[in-house]
Length: 370
Ligand SMILES: *Cc1c(COP(=O)(O)O)cnc(C)c1O
Image 1 (cartoon, protein in one colour):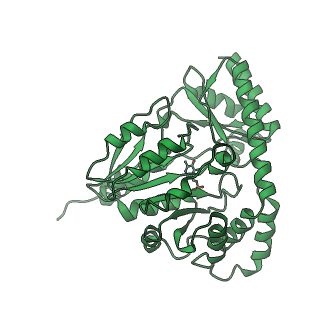
Image 2 (tube, rainbow, N blue to C red):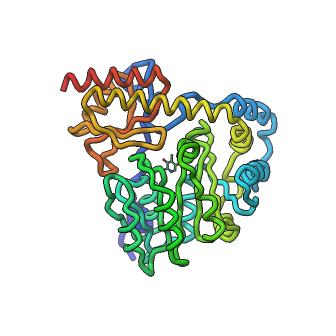
Image 3 (cartoon, rainbow, N blue to C red):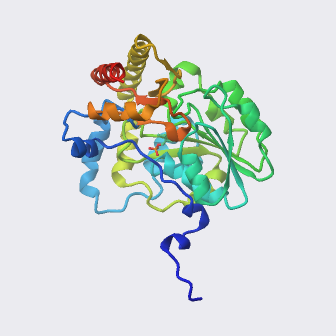
């Protein structure tokens, strides 16, 4: 009884072993460190156009009401989402970013002794959510940087409770075919929740005939997560949502904080959903930027992983960290992905045409001097 404890001894074991998520370096931090201005950030898959006009107007209109609590049920935003997707309001769960939903899923369905499955090179939040609640991570080797759904199916056990699939995946940008995905999801046993993370859905929806919403009709243990952070340009406000059966939404609603979305976020997200012009411009700028960046990589003799998102991971054929640091000194923030098991890659978010050119010039200069 007279043994002394450190604060670390007191934390539950899953948390004690957690390694915190490493976010993209903020512009202000690099400004402070280097005394540079004109820094460009292509590190967090943010929308290079800035927020849309309709979202900004909605924020302005909501400011006088900030002394009131937000609508804890997010009725207006949920109604708008339900209309857009042809779902019922009780199938929607709002999150403080879609990361919030991933965490709610972990808290609701995982515990020590249970398993969560995801792929090698998958989004870094999946292992964090799993570890935080003391569950066991089952990490399935990737196939050509993409998900190996056949191998994943063989690894499902009686203890598997959650399977995380990002489509497209971050940081690889790989996209699974809808038919392979449908086959995998329809065979998932009833004791597993399948999380289909479609954070980059808007960037592929036009081209590839994504029909994952249809699967909700036959699969009560499927939840599709989407976000306003990427194509809708509202990463700073933190709004994401889950689409699922009413039963799954009901469970998540029990662990959700009552006011997990603030009033500005709810209003801006609803307005953004009705701003198709902004969304189409975002998609067009992204497509052009992807083509410019990959043309630049080709000219430099570099290979990249073909990406369906608003980012691309390029193979430098040498450790990425020193190149990342050299780019920082030139005022360009990109993302090292060694922590994703990709030490020779850097992940570049698609910027404006001017940002993309600035980055390509900085990369060419850096590679010429190593
Ligand atoms: C960016 C991202 C998210 C979520 O971002 P939020 O800002 O929390 O909505 C979720 N999944 C993947 C794969 C992402 O890249």
